[in-house]
Image (cartoon, rainbow, N blue to C red; front, side, top):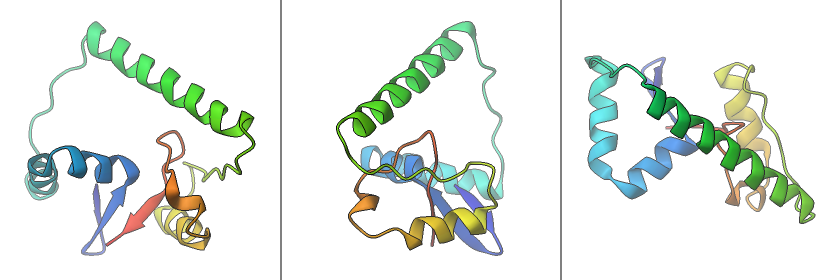
Length: 107
C-alpha cells in the first residue's frame, strides 16, 4: 500500500491481506502516516520469503503451461504506468493477479 498524491495505491497483496484480515489493512494504513518499526529479517524469515517466491514462480509457470494468456506488468515501470497497464487489461485477465509482477490498483 502506498500513498501517492493524496490517493491510496493497493497491490494485489494488499487486497489479499484485506480479505484475510481487515485489521492488517488498518495497521498498514496507519503505518503510511506514522511509520512503525519493522522487525529485522532473520534467516528463517528469509527462507520463508524465498520459498514464497519459488511458489509464485511455479504457479505462474503452471498458468502459462496450461495455455492461459499471462500478462506481465513490468515492476520497474512507474506507478502510473502500472495502474494504466492494469486497467487496460480486459476483466477476464484480471481474475488472477500474481505477486511476481504486481499489478497496481489506485483508489
